[in-house]
Image (cartoon, rainbow over all chains, first blue to last red; front, side, top):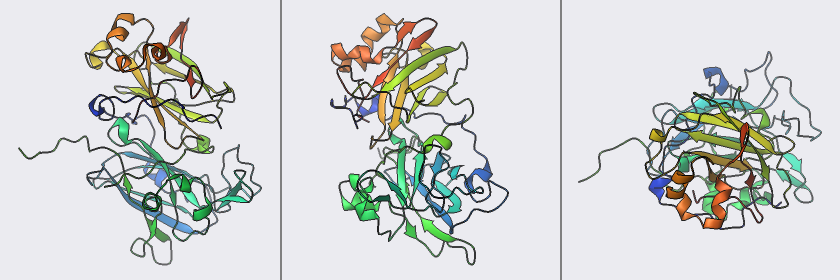
Length: 211
Length: 158
């Protein structure tokens, strides 16, 4: 894989680059129904119905309001709709696996979906990706744009996964693992997971600062 | 608070992140930009995603099997650009094999004087600046992104 740049990244002052406003995502269509991945087809998808919710915060802990969160995932059998996925697990005619929503006034997002399955990949012998959901978040600044993956607690594949393990420290890896939460779980309906996302940089909203 | 770590976009985003007319952000006179995303062996990267924006223009394009991408934009008006910078587009690159996105810029070839004064271009070694300036290949602008190699594109620390 000859993809990561070999030359050092060029540094420029934060104010010239990180702190400039990030991309305006307003052309990306978002319908309220896009946040429920279990209702995008005539029937309901197979799998364990789950709710994934949390807040998007900046590094000062301030909620990032009305920002776009996009998700994509495999179905419960571990197969992506994407035509380039050749894993011989079944597609689900009632599941695409893509969703979008805007965070609310508290920075909160919420998706209803099914738990994605693990799937094999050719990285090394007997390599399997742990269950995960891909997230893409915009935030207010160029430096806050984030694409990452959310994992599930207790997954036995986590310690073998070179993608999760590319985060060098345990504390960082733990930030990518959602927490099971009975308060989010809807009785007799769906298991609940909580996962907060912290973006780099400060909120672009001006605030009073001490003199 | 500690920022959430980035993870690769992976290979399977193509059914989720593209949206209708995603590569067309033109809000006025339209200018087409074409290019290729290339790896260190000069091979096309067929599963990359690029985003460009400037002011209120935002576009997204997934590379095709040849690593090719294209955008339609309106050249950013000078008044929308900081006075010590030349007109440019901000460009972000995502791909399998990159732990985090890469940030670069595309400058315009017909802005030689402004490019010479641009404070960001002036942070770059002179011989590498041309990786950031598109070429006029009428009727389009051509801008390749090279992830590695002799002509590796300049990427900025984000």
